[in-house]
Image 1 (cartoon, rainbow, N blue to C red):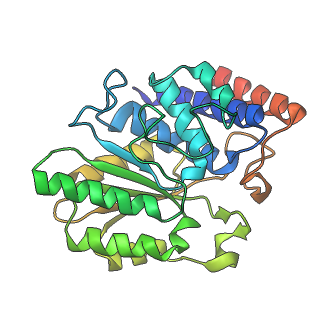
Image 2: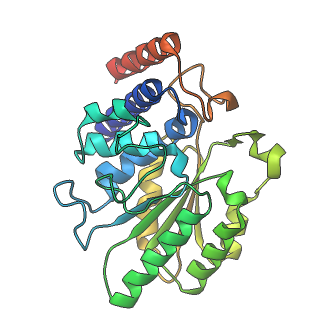
Length: 276
């Protein structure tokens, strides 16, 4: 995909996020919207995957460590062809396979069930280590929230990844600076994030604008050149990006838009799509 196609895809992902959380009357739009470009780049450019064969052995693996942003992942998987886009409207409904956190046993394209913060990266490290032990060529990617990295388990997993020189592992931190209770600086600051990952023997790439495809493309290309150590991409993003009243507003961490807000959000996203 070229940059324009990726931008249009990210915009469609945002529509799916807004549509699904509105239909569910629940969910986490803010951190899903901030990661739309990351999701788009991974699934439409970076990952070796096949929607027709979601369990193919040599596929790249992706673990959504910040599992509450499932609306972003589901929207991306649907657009990529893993299941019908129409099913996004069943998010969190009784009997739907699209629940509030990803379920690897029910959702095509989901490699790991996640939701308990801090645990996803541990699973990703295990997958990357397994590939090394078996001599497999697949790569493993995991997306963490910046509030999530306050969890101690994140650093236990990182210690193992660095120690085992897992150069087939890419850890991405969605650094939108907001968590459920406020700014991460005020709740329990993890800064400087880059220095912490460096201390755990990671190659670190700082992305000044994680909502910019040129910068993301450069970061993921650099990650592929790294040998002998895992990579951490620290991507500064805007929480709620693409919906004016959600942008950089902590209230939208875990709240669904009502009918009026849904209409406004979709109008803004339609307009943004027309301008691309």
